[in-house]
Each structure stands twice: as C-alpha cells, then as structure tokens.
Length: 119
Image (tube, rainbow, N blue to C red):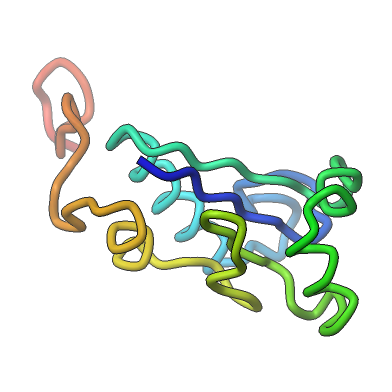
C-alpha cells in the first residue's frame, strides 16, 4: 500500500479543535485520515509550524509552494507527486488512492460507545 503525505499549513494541532474557531473541514479531514490509518494505510502529516524542514526537503512540495505560495496548503502527495492542493482529501479520495473500500470500517470499529451500550 502506498504512503500518503499531507503537508498542513501552520496549525497548533492536527485535529483543528484549537481555540474558539474550529475548522470543520479540518475536523472532517482528521476523521477521514484516522479512518484510513485504521484500515492499515500509511498516512503521514507534516505541520508547517512544527516541521518546516519536511516542506523544504520534499522537492514536489517545495516546488509547488514556490509556484503557488502558502495558499496552496494543505498539499497531498502520493508517490512523490502532488495529487491535491488547497484542501484536504475526502474519505473517498483517500480510499481511491489507497485502493480501499470507502464504505468499509476498520476492524474492531463499532457504532456503540463502550460496554455494548450505544450512545
């Protein structure tokens, strides 16, 4: 299975649940990325604020940012190529790129909370 790399803009955290202005698209993306990881996928995330060298060391990302600027973030890279820029990948896109069934749930996933009691 291929590794997907996501180059985030400068964020305080990867979940987007920071402060009073919660970015709903980032919360959804985090859930979709967690789903892909739960399905066994390799997804790496790099935060511009915390890992600037990762941006500088990736030729595709560095070139894309030189042409398009930081407005292009987030950038998604697959097999060394930029496959998406300016927004986070959806679950269906992750599934397509990783050859996963978007309707499948990770092993052990449950709609119930704990102890067999549903929320």
